[in-house]
Image (cartoon, rainbow, N blue to C red; front, side, top):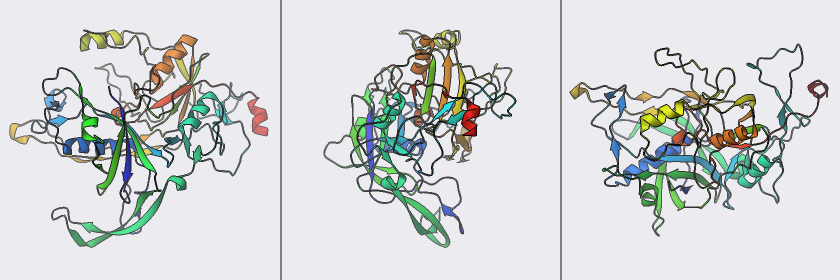
Length: 454
């Protein structure tokens, strides 16, 4: 699969609103950094507006029934990741890890403790260990964005060389507040009655939105996915290519690159049996109800990945063993993977910042003339996503198991960063959720009681 990087430069203000109201005294929160699904939708619409011919399409189904036969869906192979800020120097920036909270530094500041205090009351489930700070409290607020070089230094347990690797929001973007007049949905003109206030995002000069995207299409015949629709839509052929992004469809110019290695942090080699997984993008782990007929076990979801059971055991399989073999049928492949043993590892601790609400709007799909299944449009269900920067700590039985776990969790798998192999979000991973990178970790090296007294 051919992965490209897209750098978006807004022509003016840009609007990325959430589900909060924009009425009366409430200011619409449209100045937040956009979530991955927002820019994925923008790329999808750009592909559709490009009017590509002979692209593969499929009819959506639900429970074996055709849903909206009149609306063939296209570009199902689209995969994206981001957006990430790209500064004036061309460096891609990433959210600071939750366990590296020293200003102007990428070194680890929080570590799990080896054992709980005897007799202490804890709300942690199972045998999870608490995570404590290894530095004294400080009023010096750490920068929320760090460069790729700084992130890789964090993975190695060091600091990057040089300066300019740690940036605050105001270095990258700011919020501007404006008053607007409501629009009549039928005429498309101002209704002259409703007023609202909204905050808009303005990027600083030469700051861009960085995305990774791939969309290899196999055409109507469905023989081989050899048509690169991202390169065809954003050709960089001397003419200005644009995209409409966010609310109010603001215009952004697009520059495409095809790098040998993607500008995302690459994991170091894993040694020993302890694996730390740090999220680069948010991840959604929904609650799963029990279904005895389908042998589905109930899962709480939320902060706990659905591929970790209630006993904190890992349910992931070795990525190399679970690869589909040449000539292997889909059903045979699924049966073989289901019979493979899970990686022998357990979740030990986690640092999870405040969740992020993720919502959206669905179109209306109907085909009532044929009596087919109908799906009403409207607001999508709101999910609470684990934010980027969250950290999970695992212990494996063997070093080989630790390497297998890292290969299954790293966004680049076993590659050197040339392609996105793993998206460990249960939902909408293809839109950029669930990218993470692994490294080693160690327990806090002092007695927890002495640390608390200090």
